[in-house]
Amino acid sequence: MLKGLALTPPILGRITIGKTVERNGKRLPDKDDEFTITSQVHGPEGWVRHPLDEVLRKPGTKLRSIPVWLLFNDSELSLRANYSLFDRRTGRPLCVGNGTTCRRSTAAGVQTLPCPSPEACELAAGGACKPYGRMNVRIGEDDELGSFIFRTTGFNSIRTLSTRLKYFHAVSGGQLATLPLELRLRGKSTTQSHGSTIYFVDLTTRAGMTIAEAVAQARVQAQERLAAGFDQSFLDEAARQGLANGAFEESAEEGAAVVEEFFHSGGAPDAIAPPRASEAAAAATLTEKLARRLDEAVLAQTPQTASPRTEQA
Image 1 (cartoon, one colour):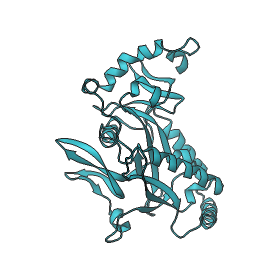
Image 2 (cartoon, one colour):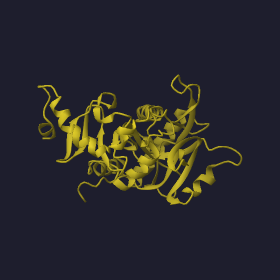
Image 3 (cartoon, rainbow, N blue to C red):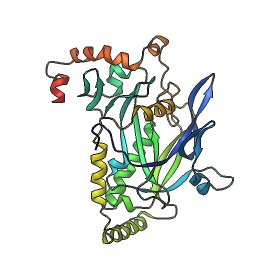
Image 4 (cartoon, rainbow, N blue to C red):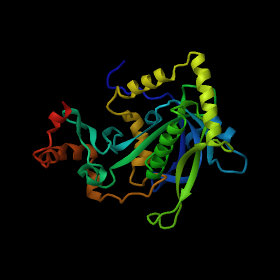
């Protein structure tokens, strides 16, 4: 196994609730009010739609629900969410944190440092650091270990999906991988949205199925898998070790696409756009800011706070 390379769940395609459009010569993210299922192939007109998009889309209606399965029983493997900061020029991940600690790329290598959350972090000024979630789900039965990924920087989607996964894990006795579920698109308005609709993703049992019926089906299928020799606990552990093998989940190549869709100053599809950074701030890359401010952040720590080198050890 190559050290430093995160082994992520195999991806067959993407699930989005937005798209990238070109305005004034710039490619900017734009929100949408339906799901789109795409392949991993990018053509002249954008991401090529996956055949499943047409299969699930009813004629004359918008795709607002997708029947899915999860790959893992561990909810934190299916949905990985953290605060993330990317270099918007190169797409390279720079810092990933959970509000307590972070892994940060510095001139001395990747270090473990305190994470104060974006509101209190100097490096996160101007909306540079955002909550960022990735959820892997199965659609259909063609590839039981392949997945479609839903990425979002929307707080509503991340909070709702995290809560649902915890609840479903509890009521099913941990049998998330065999629970028949459905991604649903919902809308809401807030004072911050000024009356416009914000769309976010929810997770429910399949349409027409109660929780009790879904749990009963999940337990039967889990027993059938076990009898056939399918060890779900080993699969979860393999995924856990693979993700932990790298400091950052995204490579620079993947990060470039993520930055274009979510971390550009235009904002995320299912969230209100953050304030645009000043022209002077935009001129400096995040990499340059990181190098300049790292020493300042260390000097500003209280005497009781360990130095970055000590924290790493």
